[in-house]
Amino acid sequence: MEDLTPSLRAISGCAPGDASAQPILTDAQREQLAALATRVDVRPRVIVYREGTPAEHLFVIGAGMVKTFRDLPSGKRRIVAFWYPGDVFGLAERGKYAYTVQAITATTLYRIPRAPLKDALLRDGHLQFKFLIKVTHEFREAQRQKISFMRRDAVGKVATFFSMLEQQLGDATVPDDITVPMSRSDIANFLGLSAEAVSRATHELIRRRIVAIPDLHTVRILDRTRFALLVSKM
Amino acid sequence: MEDLTPSLRAISGCAPGDASAQPILTDAQREQLAALATRVDVRPRVIVYREGTPAEHLFVIGAGMVKTFRDLPSGKRRIVAFWYPGDVFGLAERGKYAYTVQAITATTLYRIPRAPLKDALLRDGHLQFKFLIKVTHEFREAQRQKISFMRRDAVGKVATFFSMLEQQLGDATVPDDITVPMSRSDIANFLGLSAEAVSRATHELIRRRIVAIPDLHTVRILDRTRFALLVSKM
DNA sequence: CGTAGTATTGAAACGGATCAATATCTGTGG
DNA sequence: CCACAGATATTGATCCGTTTCAATACTACG
Image 1 (tube, rainbow over the protein chains, first blue to last red):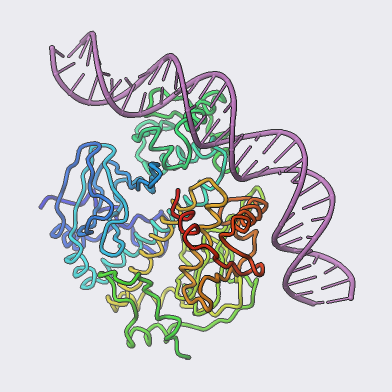
Image 2 (image 1 turned 135 degrees about the vertical axis):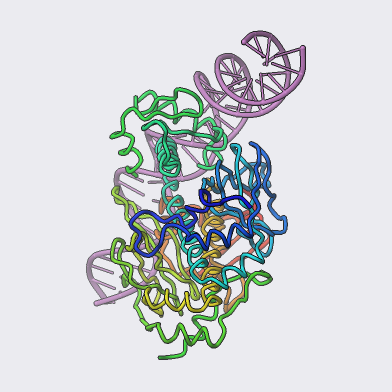
């Protein structure tokens, strides 16, 4: 079993300064999880699992990015979340996966079978507490997104989306350059806008000289003041 | 310390049939929590805590209903969630409460200080697991609402809202009668609509003979088939 | 029973959805 | 490395539904 250190490091996912949490796993905890986990590498666009399949595993992202979505009867697709390195996904609803998960980029996953994980969590209260903190964190993030993206204006939504990406992919190589791995239609399906509206909103940000788009998957922030203003003004 | 049985019974909050969870607390666990909790009764419109206040307690709802919200710089109010009997709220962000919580009806709360609770959870892995399940459940519900209310049509949103209320307040005295404790503007702030749009959408449901509104706080479903169709069609 | 807050109703305007056409990208094979 | 084809993204024009503003009706609480 390879070393899970880099991928499981962030499992508790707490913001710095959160007094109630120890940010990283102890060596012993990491070993415990490593003994249960299987590393899986997937290429872009590979389906990790489908909605309705028996939920046998929990997944931790080591590297890359996946999207969680559901296709509606109307044919529309709703993207519920994008998951980044350190995130945990695979939560079940009545024993089945609630959404379909698909890789966006090349992704490394650590797959942990649920039953042995549950035993380990019951055995080690401190390890379980890390998971409790992590799920709490993801819950808060879901609520935060719910209110952030309740705003109606497309330009504000798209700006907020870019801002969110910048925060979550904190490891920016170039400051002010945000990597946008997902497609425009993914963004649209996540924000509840049409693809055309995302395109026009992006164009509007460029027209106002707030951002530049060197290529489709990079957003460069030109005017951070007005960018932040746009994100907060709602 | 009074008996917390009725209020803590539902703490794991799992849907029936969820194989991964025991739905209720054991007697011993209930006693453990009861020893930590203080019962608090609040009248309608009382603020339980304000956003930004040090988060010292976790709350379990015994009876009644509260709302969780944040007021935006623009003066608009975003309601993030309504909480029902058995729900747990009071999650912290960097040691502070993330939202303001206010009672809608007369409400009974069980207030549990965080530090002793954490000790109890670390001591009893099974008790902690109940909380892990509960937070997981609330996380899933937040995600589900995110996609449910991403739809644009006001009529569908309002119908879905009523449907959600019916499910959560399952203890209907009269079948097909849904109690709607919150105000119309609360509904608007929750759904991301204007109060006028909620009013018009409700009127449209009445006009189509799908529901009747005997009084402002009661919705009677007249045509369950078309009601369900409206909720699912998105 | 009165009054302040809440809810409804009407008219106008804005903004995003939709449909249709064009442009651009991506990844595959030569 | 380049060319090609299918998918993805952009752009334009029109339509529809929600927002907004303003006025009126209703509730609920003291």
